[in-house]
Image (cartoon, rainbow, N blue to C red; front, top):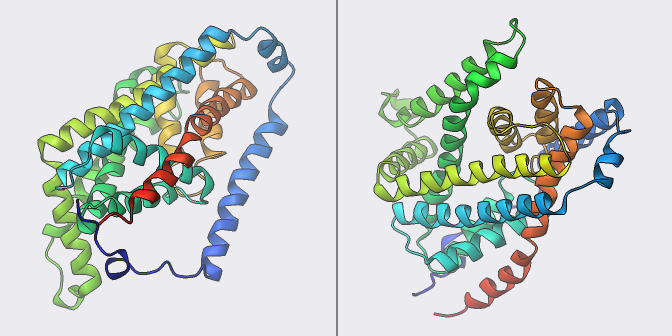
Length: 326
């Protein structure tokens, strides 16, 4: 496949401005602040004893489940790209996903890994417009998968929530679903002529391309793989809980983990660290799990992903080596 001239299609990244530095500092403050707050308030006395009796089998199963989640994520990217007219093999998609996840751990920002994966996919010969749409679709399908699973776990979460706030989870989930549906129709809303300028029209055109890609068989297959990523994470939390002898049932995890996944995806911390742990601690507290134990469960998820994506560094070099082929 012919590789396009990158210099002619994509501009150089602009230098980081003071606003960018301020945003990065704010994310760092949120990450550190939440982790410190959890560490101070948590009772760590029993955690060491649980690690002393850690079950290696359950721990290995949790790591294997997270590895399976990466395989699902690779296929999610392959089919998302296919729905936008970009054809890549399963092996290439997995390498791109691993490289993107690895770089996402290194880059300060929730979208760093996505942008890196998109750039490498473009360097592999896929059209720039298709890659941009696929990147947005990939994120959207991951969000839709979380929303669907959140709906499944809502009854169990509501029954465990205090009556005064039991209405909040269903309302938030419904608002999220409605927001996604409305956002996909925004290009069909009549706008005043004064607003129809290139930045706005480009955005509206992108929404139209995204909607067209969403209603394809390839996007449906990608959506199933997106759900697979979240389900393996939920199962991994249960396995890690068994390894630590924590009474976390599959339904408990189904109710809490999707909320933590969504919280971690918000661009308010460094790659979701801190926010994910806070959401896990708050959610699992409803089912009698201490904040220290919940934080450890969340950290096991984050650390396992980090370790599993280390090969992505080598794959990134391999993908870069393929770029000069024309």
